[in-house]
Length: 151
Length: 270
Image (cartoon, rainbow over all chains, first blue to last red; front, side, top):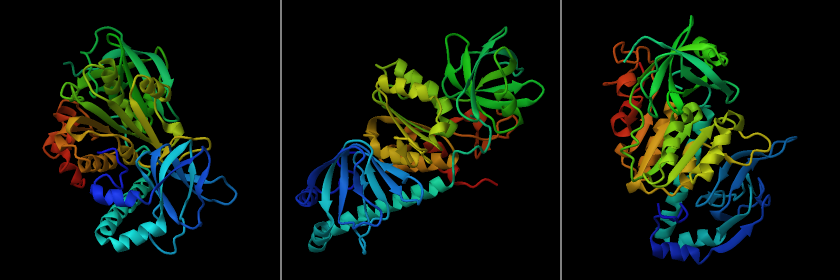
């Protein structure tokens, strides 16, 4: 573990620097909205500090939080695939510091530098697979009582 | 070691959540030998039956705490006990956490559900010996915020320098903590793979996935200790009910190195 955002922690320094030329530091106050479900996914974030909650809109109820993300984790992958719309909403649970990346420019950089593009897409694919697997595990409802031994 | 239950008296009862109760017990006469974190006792609810329950706290002398989840007749009877009631205990059984082997290293605790109970004495031990260990990280997964065990104690652990992260599957209104599977919390921790010992307990599926995730982060399998469940009856390795491949978990476990169990956990039960 390096302390870099997980997306970039094993990326060669040259490629990481190239990507970071597109990044801006951006802070979100507590309870602010990063994006809403269905909105245009034109950017993504790497969290430097703080917590972000991903939620789903359910009519007649407050947004249902389905996952939280913290330092070093990536917020958003819907920017990779057309039609570039957010599948979930995202809110800052407290003050959040991020690096913000513009999606279109990152995609262009990936096309122009296919080595970087391949590496970045591999990491995003791994992230998506990990979140899919985590979702499947939670479907198992693992913590319900199954047996008594040993506690 | 006696295989006859010794009489103990319940001295305190604490409801931990909707179905888990912690029982503090003291010997009525002769006491069992000293317990160490991760080992378990066979607890006998008189007239009902006997179950293995890990020790969840070891207090001065021979006061023991066992956290019991009511899932059947015996555990239900144990959870209905009150202060002053009698219970039978034999043990201590099994192999606990190798905390001596973790000396000098960071300790990473990963607990799922009631798996936090056998890990609690290990956490307390590490906090009580700050010079002996490096950083302490405690990652906890629970179904809901209400299911979390030892909620008041978690803040004490934080104040005592442990990094404690919690993720629940189903947050309720007002929950401001983490949501997600416990393995996602590994991303929040700066694990130093070459100097970390991991202690893992929870549902077996969670142990499998946590083991894989820890190895993916560079931890060697022999630095990952897991506590496993099987149907323990005798506690002495004779009846064979708790067999897992070449292991009898009541005798060779419940705590076993992931290097020994990794392949065994991939075998489906018959």
